[in-house]
Image 1 (cartoon, rainbow, N blue to C red):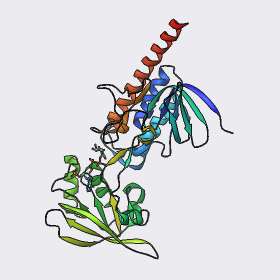
Image 2 (image 1 turned 45 degrees about the vertical axis):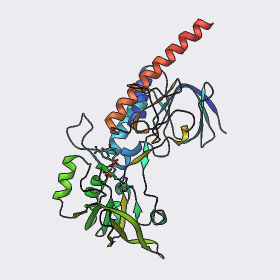
Image 3 (image 1 turned 45 degrees about the horizontal axis):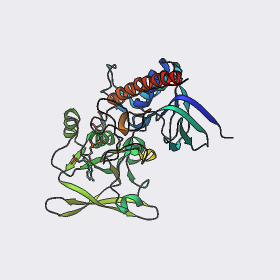
Length: 321
Ligand code: NAP
């Protein structure tokens, strides 16, 4: 049977922003409740090597880092809830957060840390072959391409990391990028250019996924040169789309102010949203840095700001009495 509970602070999302907010809120004795969502641990659980999270001299694994954060949040007193939020009502106080299980969480303050998800090109053929050779997660699906040829679309950190990771399995990795330079970090680019299994097709985009039915599978890609419009068919067994991420902010549409690109708007140097008592941290609000460590920093800010908000509310209610 579904139940309704009440907390001083609810955190939605369990990436570095959510866990850091939980750790700070728990240590402020606010007894935080964290609703973990469909992919507990967030994007870092589908990456492998992490080399840029400070505090670790050796390369660590993304899933391991998230397990540590979860343990730390639990250890200091966070209540973790394995559920997915399908509705929020920020128009009444306490705020109401409804989950797939039917449970309702009432909250005096809320931290939105729902992160971001991989973007797709939205080609009909891309949709048709998703899960049948088209993927947005090399870590999840790379293993299926042992000894095969794959294409990676994109030129950022994700695309370059995915291409490098795929060389562990594939015999050839072709990176298709729409410009003539990557935006990925220099160190990653150097690794990519040194790897004999990787080939780059510059100034080009994916126009279509070529595939066959029975069984449904990818057999290649139609690649278009953006300057000459020349079209080439490139044979491949798999296509990995790595063109960035969109914020997971739909739940809050019409309730908190958003930027035109869908990221949640916050006050300058703050995590405060347009609704007093609602704070946003991590990739759902940060369209500039989008790093695990900046997400963690924003999570810390959100918890400290929520703590101040709750203290001010308390002073007001005592004064009113
Ligand atoms: P990103 O940096 O936004 O890069 C997206 C790439 O996809 C860009 O090269 C972009 O091309 C290309 N692209 C976008 N839309 C496209 C389209 N419609 N057709 C073809 N190409 C398209 O995204 P990301 O690589 O996923 O990284 C997201 C954030 O996470 C970044 O801040 C990144 O630094 C961070 N990240 C960090 C690490 C790490 O530190 N180890 C790992 C992964 C991600 P243009 O270059 O032409 O814009």
